[in-house]
Image 1: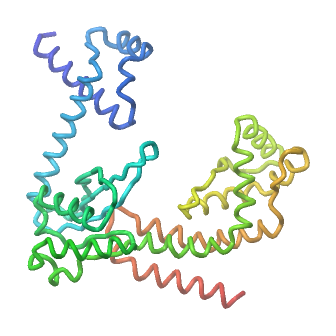
Image 2 (image 1 turned 135 degrees about the vertical axis):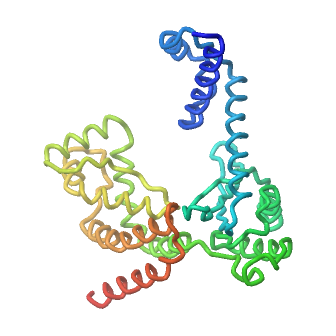
Image 3 (image 1 turned 90 degrees about the horizontal axis):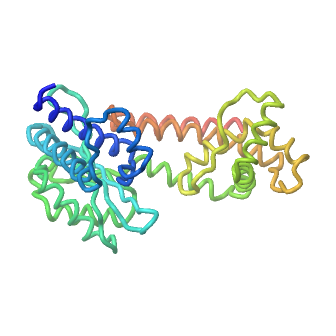
Length: 333
């Protein structure tokens, strides 16, 4: 093996290592783990394992390279771009971040999506702060004159922020002078509708939720639950899953899975003295009724959230289908 080939392999393997850390969100500290060092040494003794700082540098090089490729793609792209944004709060330091994504059709008529920025947004998250972050991003990527629509959550701050954006952008470059810029997130609107409905029937859901909490609370309880499910010959491999109260689709998944194991809960209530939150029969009937309705919204949300196909053209049809289905259920009841 020549020196040049050896040097090339070092660079290639370092690149693969950095991509592995990015892909699986491994901590940089894994480089210092004894087991990992021994594994790499046995796998390829000639590879010089890098330090944390070098790994960090390699990751940033990959980011710069990917960003440069995305910049060239968006610069060459001749079509307009739809922008979606969302705010995210870190669980540890409670800091707010905004992700900004561009969606466009490339020269081969393929739908493309590129994350432009994942940026820290200082508090308070006012309309002025949000608008400034967005404008900076548009100018940085040179797409301020290529915008088609801007999709945001259905809240008053975003309404005010869109008005500020229109003052900061050249409206002559926007479709219909910017009157089409603001698009409300259909999935978020569905979420508000469902959350409003679920808030009226919280007690029955809460008893099922408490049962799921109890039987997923420890490995021993999970094992006991699975053993009883096998004894009752429940033909299902799905595990009980606890929902997030702010995400109704997770509530749907929790209820639909719990319904499958209804008899298991009843059996365990007779064998486990400390299990005191067994749902009543009408709780299960309510859950079954809720799941029937939520399934419609769950399917619609999945369609609205698609990334590999346009969604604007299916919005109106799905909304009408929801209305017709709910009206039919009401009539037949």
